[in-house]
Image (cartoon, each protein chain N blue to C red):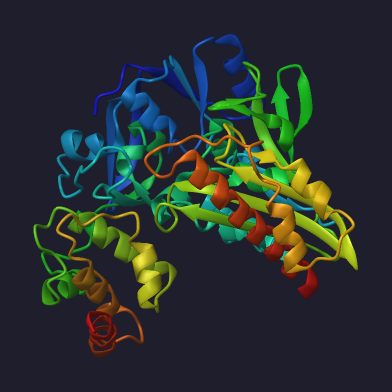
Length: 173
Length: 288
């Protein structure tokens, strides 16, 4: 049993690196990532679980890190946006966001990338509707959804950018 | 956001969790936390000790019994329900509705037990569980008791749970041969807060033999509409007769008015979703 207390020592593996820290039980996981570990790629948007800017992958599941307390992550394996690039090289999804103008102000982008990463792992060949459902928990306040959907579709197996453009074209007509 | 200082503990068994809950007045169970975390942020409830039950394996199982009934542990997430072959084998409607709760992140954390214990009138699963005649299995230090879903939801954010008790699982009987279930929501947007919804379960053998019609968001808790059920019992399962029965939803229900709809609008739409839910249940039964 984790002993009862207002502070806890937790061990968390983030992007392959093990961190051990003493945390207050009341600390939100997103603050642990940003303020304690200085992993500021994960953003805080609404702080109410509505916007998805703080999305991370925890034990293989996409979650909102503002909706968890730091001690709940004890023992967890976490992936954040900082873990996507390899030695400064953008990964294919990040490249696709860049190529397809999948970001405007960039605030929602870390969450969108993690939602896109999770979606493509669960469903490597999503339809446009499945992508839209997959990012429903992520709000882009610039409303740049068309290019975000296109960015994810562009790297999805079996769906080239041409098809994505075709679907978007339909929509615009 | 900075929360009020709070104690946290992660027990290793339900027995241990119950001991802690019963001996600490300010203790509250923490499951998926997809509502409780916001409650703590807004400091609308005072919790001194969070008892994290989310990882307890005793609360995480889905079991399909030989008779086709389904037992779902209180800490099974919506996403796990959605992807469970055991759920899909006999209770597809539960998987389908779990897959329409909010968004992927919430479905990965939120639990069926939390959905019920919060007793938020907009929550998806309570009306369905009442329609499916589910039983809530509750444990305390002194033993186990069973409460029909129909009697579990007591009011806004209020259930039949007593202090120190824990909802451990939910048992859903098999959907009878010749029967089906339907669930229809009118929502603000796709997979979001509902304005009004209805769930139904029927068994048809030439005529409608058994029927449950449950309305949500017309009262503080899901309610069975007994007059509509009575009108449907023993009649042929036709669209006209179902429509006529739904017209019985009248001034006996007094929904709230809010920014998403007036009381009159909700009542009118309650007739529509109730009719469609019953027709969907009949149609599903006919396919089997």
